[in-house]
Length: 193
Image (cartoon, rainbow, N blue to C red):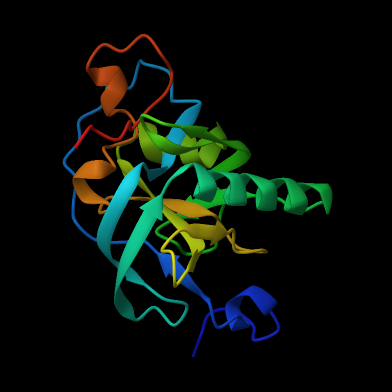
């Protein structure tokens, strides 16, 4: 059975489907003395064919298009949810349990994709510093026709810390940018190409 109540109108929309992006492992090392990133790439720029999971946790192949239009839709829905008093958070392994971080904003970066500004919870910081998790995987409602992320899943985490993100090489580990000596506190930039 689906993990979400049938009363959620977005999940009942015939042009929209839930994607939990899980799969291809990414190897990572991390320096625990460096600060955690304040921003992560939520969905990398470009077109991606991924193996994800639907609301019933069944594996599906999905084509995802991340562009400025998708970023505008996600950012607008984020603002709508926040205005209604909803918390937008991250979890681990798409479990919908303890929060690992709170999303403060979504933005568009033409070089990286849809970026989430994150305040890590002490629990999330511990999981990252102890290298329990090394990457991130988004969760969103995707327009079946365009492939674009369309909306967040109201009342559920907008993604989770994982060790095997579906976006694979396009979703490097959270701390990898800082390991390379980057001065910025941005992380997991999508590579060109």
